Length: 165
Picture 1: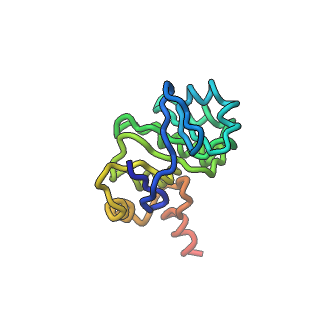
Picture 2: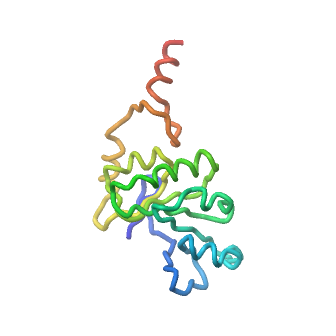
Picture 3: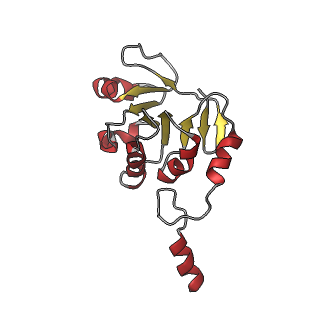
């Protein structure tokens, strides 16, 4: 599946590994939270980076103590209307100070990309056939924001106060 990262389509070096599948000897891998917890010590010792995949019923707090060891935190969207991952991404960025990759996986719609960016996602797995231009149109639809978010963009009220000064 193509990966859109920081507004560009890239080859995804990460491999999703199911809990029942052997972990490859080399290369970056993304494992489920259960496996991370069970094999944490061995995974940390790997020479290649490790990421964790969280279901929608997991929280940012489930990995908060391990963020120094994780190259990617991937939040699953089982259905497009399940918004719990937005909250978790924002918490990772703002509350826990995570600076690594936060990835959206699963049922992700182009219309949601701007809001994902605002919450702290910097990468998402997109459907085959999607183009960078499709995603750029989605993120360029709005240029002014009323609410502060994890992306640090200036809000309308802050702009008004700055311009009034």
